[in-house]
Image (spheres, rainbow, N blue to C red):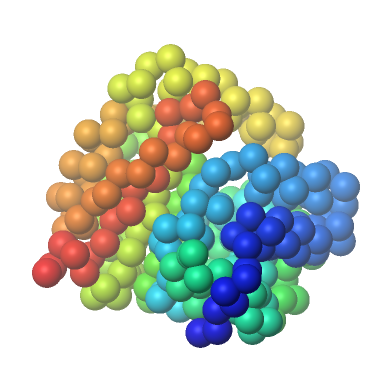
Length: 250
């Protein structure tokens, strides 16, 4: 792994943002503007890099991947490492060699394939219901802001399948809304509905849980769970749950 002492994290993040967004021009103005806005305003993407949440895991499954933003970001990170631009201030860069994105909405899958399908990472996009899709063996599963679209029984069943697909040292990154934070959770739900409508999708019912309920569910499956606030700069009630099997078995 090459590091550059002079590499400035803020400058590098701007470069990663631009590089990860650029391929979406091929998918149309909406896809490009959505990619730029999402990567710029959502704190989760830069946060994953600054904390090293994606590091050391090669086989990635992205459930509810949308138009594949994470695939584009992983490729941009790989390119930065090859160029010797990864800052020492950050933990090790992601080392993904295989990416599988699972997405229910055909239009999002089409945008993903048109934009990032030909990247060196060779991402594989599957148009399927996350509750029924086959989950390949993997080291890391990422589920950002989609699990609340299925009922509680389906949530538990999917997480059980995730646990089975993960290797012995596997990690789950799950972002959820904390229903116990009532006002912020309500704002999150309203914005979620607006964005879903703008993207041309129907408005499904949602099933939330308080943070304590999410943690208990994951711990019952054998995960050790760390809760990381993930609403910086927003009025939302989002929390990133970093769930590790290795720590649970230690």
